[in-house]
Length: 166
Image 1 (cartoon, rainbow, N blue to C red):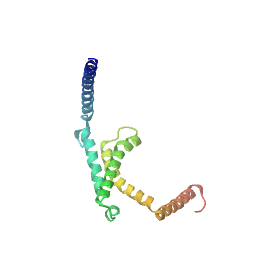
Image 2 (image 1 turned 30 degrees about the horizontal axis):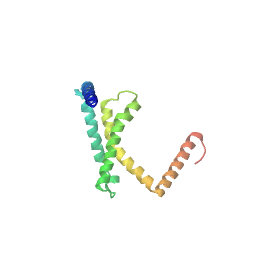
Image 3 (image 1 turned 135 degrees about the horizontal axis):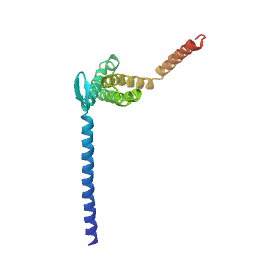
Image 4 (image 1 turned 120 degrees about the vertical axis):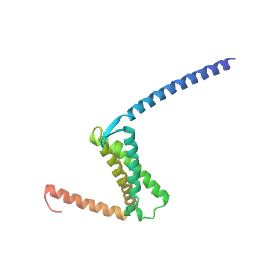
């Protein structure tokens, strides 16, 4: 008999908890909807904020896809899965650049046009940069050459400010 009472109490608590969870989710969804429906002027149009977020994602995809046609990415013997992996890295790089790096650099809310261009450029450059870093990490000869070039450039840069010869 006690088992039935305990089971009924647990069932009642679960139903009440589920109802409270439903109310909390509905409230947060309404708040999110209100925030994303906020309009911003862009090219003499009042467009909702969600449109800019979607457009930033689309531009990141376009930039990442466009980077696959650059000679550095096109001529290599990459398989389809490696190209998809490079595209995914490019998309993530574009989104991180537009939504995390740009606002932290500007110190506030960046202009939407700058955010869109940042998503496009960072996704394009991110794919190629990750590919170059991977090649640099795999090749010891290339790593030594890059180190020697960086050292010679650093010496000439310091010579500009402090005088002396290279």
